[in-house]
Length: 246
Ligand code: MN
Image (cartoon, rainbow, N blue to C red; front, top):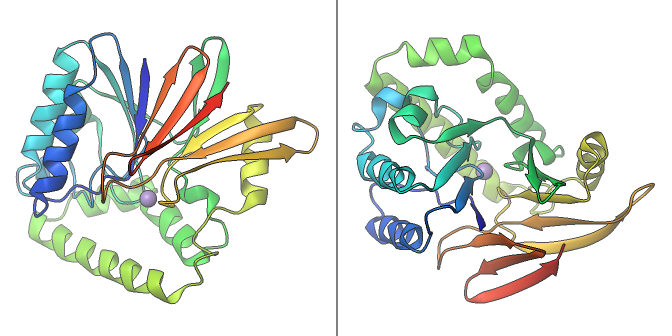
């Protein structure tokens, strides 16, 4: 079975959330696959900062998971875009590029974090472009941890306060961006997170017919996840569950 999650926003301050995550992982079985579609962590300062951020319990949980034969893939989100190869190697997980094509039973499914689809959020797109550049990342990662922490906090708080001031419609995906990326990859199913608006969206893609966009939710109340099994997709969020025959 294939499992997908995103947007946990784990912080050391939230023990309940960490426990929720670890309890969820125990439900997976050897031979299953787990895809984490970004924002597992509230923020990340580099793979050498795991202990500093008190995220070593998460590293341990992921390592135990992969040691059990549960293949685990990680796509970076807009909060944890600095997760790198060192952390991945330590946990035995595979890093994915944004816009990953998952081959499921001969059918391609497009996986994304989702922030790149929010093209109406101009300030975020400018920030995203900057921090995804190798030169910016090299410079950031060369600084002492405490400086990195200060810089990340400044950005995070600005982003938080910015969010409340924006029209909520701007923070959702832009339909034309969804259409474009699905057409580019020739898929009829897109799964992403980021917007914290869990739903199954059927719509018509001109030239391609009926397609679906499925959105994962956050973990504030309960685990939010997708399960893919045979020909069924199940989206579970806050005690409710949506099924889609695929
Ligand atoms: Mn996000």
